[in-house]
Structures are given as C-alpha cells and as structure tokens.
Image (cartoon, rainbow, N blue to C red; front, side, top):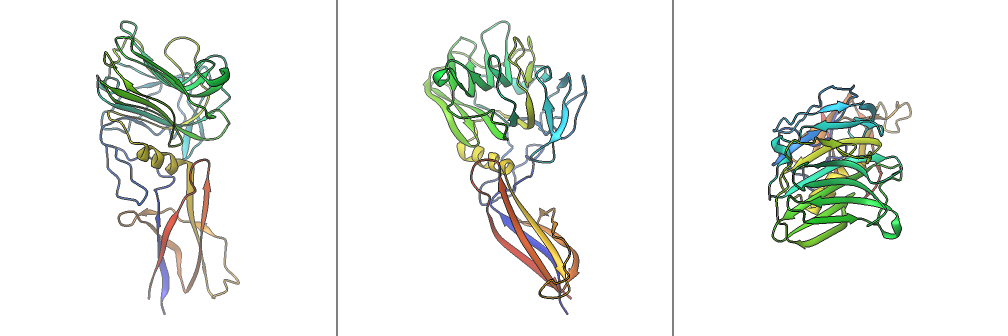
Length: 331
C-alpha cells in the first residue's frame, strides 16, 4: 500500500533562515523575500573568534574586518551568534568601498540582545572621520535627546558639512530580549532618516537638506559593538550584521525582523496505526527549498500513518504564519 514519504509547508516568511549570501534575491514568499542587491556587508557571526581573527563577509563586496578582544560564541536566531563584552568590538577599515555611499542612500541593520545600556550612548554600529565632520552611529541613546533623559534606540547621522540629525526613539532596546535594529537614510536634498526597531519606525526626520556626503575615509575604523573613539561601548549578543547602499523599505525591514524574531517549526512522527498508539517522539524537520515559497523534507521513514504539528513562537513583532502543509505518498 501507499506510505507517506515527504512533507512540505508554505510559511509566510523563511523563519529562522539567515539572509542570503552573494547578493541573492530570494525566491518569493507571501510575506516578502530578502533582496540582497546592493548589499555591501553581511556578517553571519555563527562562530566565536579570538583577538585578531578575520571576519567572514558573505556579501559580494568581500569587506575585510577583524576582532578586537573576543567574539564569544552564543546561541543565535539563525544558529550561532556572537557575544561582545564592553571591551570587545569588531573593526573594519573604513576606507573600503562599503563605507562610502557618497550622497546616496544606505541601510544598516542587525539583530541584538543588548545588556542594559550604561554610561553614555551604547553604539552597536558606528564610524567617523578625523578630518571632515562625518559622524554616524546606530545603537542605544542615553539621556538627551531621549524623552525624560531616558534611553531608547537611535543615534546620529552627520554629513561631511556638519548637517546633523540626532534622534532617540520611545522604545526599549535593552530589555534582554532579541530585537532587530536598523538605520535608513533615503534621499539627499531633501532626504530623510529613520531608526527602525523590530520592523517599525521609532524615530525619524524628513525634509533634511544634506549639504555633504557620508563617505568614511579610513582615518578611523568602522566598528560594531562600540564607537571608534570615546567610551560608547555596547555589550550583548549580535547576529546578522548587514549594510546596503540603498534604502530598504519599512516592509522589507519588517519581513527581515520577523524572519529572525519569529519561528514556525514543523514536527512529525510516523506511526504504524491511525491512533499512533505506539508512535515515537515528534522530530523537527529541517526544510530545504521545495518550490518558490515552499520548504520541504523527507519524513524520518516511510509509514502508513503520520502525525504533524506546527509549533509557532516569537520574540517580538507579529505572530508567525504557515499557510499550507502538503504530504506526499507513494508505494
């Protein structure tokens, strides 16, 4: 007789799957797929690294960087993640092309599980020039301009001529949970800046008349987990650090946040009878691509009966969705 052999499912998004390497445009999912065109930096940070060890950039640009201190190994949203103490950061020479968008658009993004913000501003990504006035950072603001001298996600965007935007959002970044944090600069004369937390704009300014560009010149490194000068170090876990030379839409960032902050796990067990009276434990399926927007896998073993369940969870943002499940049988 027939035996069930494969199962596939259609999630709203590719939950738990890292961003694609090499500038790939993902196959379509109903909730949007990652478009990695114009991606200039992609650090998956899946393994721990010691002082001076090289970072692997999975973007087409091959941007080089090293660890200063240590990048500890930590559980992440896509497998492994990196852990940075306040004395640790990742450093990348800022004269590389990734850090010169000129007067063009750019997006920075990363997942963080931040320790409580302490001292002055805690920077997760940042850079500046010694000569010239470019000064850029994304992280946790402390004090002014935050409401009530509190803390919130935000930072500074200042161009080479000194035009300045300094923003703080009314949201919690350092609550011990995973969050997705992004900075988007779009347009130039006029332009706008948005700070985005878990796919939602929490602080922004439009109508900015930028007078100069935003290219870094190599006089100071671009850093992750701190700022190249001063005591503005961040601490916590970090995953999927990415930069683009284009402005990602809020819809793209919302989908990017959800793929890491939500999970939809499909589990199965095979049985010899319809009641599964002697069925074993449920086993999670590691789905591979099975057509646009579908993931699929072979069952642990062919069987006349099968039970499946879908386990949904999230750290923040909207609940995950699985639209359909299909089973295939054969003799």
